[in-house]
Length: 286
Image (tube, rainbow, N blue to C red):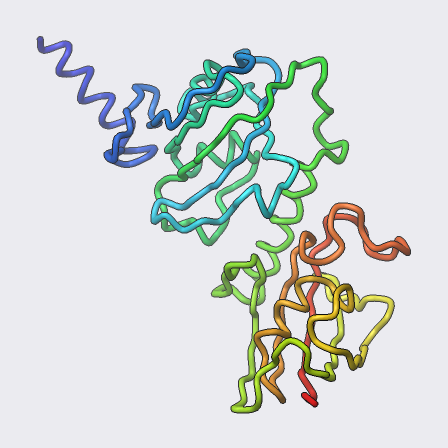
C-alpha cells in the first residue's frame, strides 16, 4: 500500500512539473503528460520509433490561447515525427493510435518545443507551464516514405517562418499579438474618418519590406480601386484595409499564407514562406 501511494505521489509530481493538474477528463500518464481520447478512427496504426503522422492540429497555451492552427498555418497538415528523446512528450502514446483518431494532449512547454519543434520556448509562452495539443490523425507515414528533414517540407518551412516573426517581434514589438486572421498589427494611427465599405472606390498608399528591413522591389505604391475587387492586393492587405478609416495608417506583419504563400511571387522576387512587413495608409474614399 505504501509503495502504491509513493508511486502515485511521484506520478503526480512529474505531471505537475511538466503539465500541471490535468482535470477536465484528462488522464495523467506516469511519464509526465496528460491525454484525452476524443474520437476513434479505423485507419492504419502508427508505428513507434519510425515514421511520422500528419494531423489536423490546434495548439494552445496553458491559458487556452491558440497560437497555431494547421487550418491556417499548415494547410497540408502538421507533421509529427514519432521518434522521441523524452517520454514526457506523449509521442509514445501517439504511436499507439490509428488514422482517424482524435486526441488531446497536455505536454510541458519546454518538452513540447524541444520534441515537436526542436527549438526553445518562444517568448510569448514563457509564462505558461504547458502546451495543449488537439490532434486528428490524417495520415500515417512510414519511415521509407518520409521526406528528409531540412529539404523544404512544409513543417520545416512553416517553423522557420514562425521563428522569423517571433524574433522580429521580440526585438521590435514585444507586445504585439496575432489577430484572429493571423495578422500582426504593430502600429495603428486612428482617425474619425469614414469607414471602408465594399463597392466604394478607395485610394491607398503602401510600402512593403522583408523582416530584415530590405524593401520589396516595387517600393512604395499608390493604388486606386473598387474595394472588394478580387486579386487587387494580397489577401492580408485587403483584410487590413477593410478595417481602416479614411486617413488612418497602420504597420503590419502579413504571414506568407496571407501574402505569397508556399510558392512565392510569380516573378520569383519573393521566396516561398516569406512573411512581409507593410506600411499602409488609406488616403481617400470616393
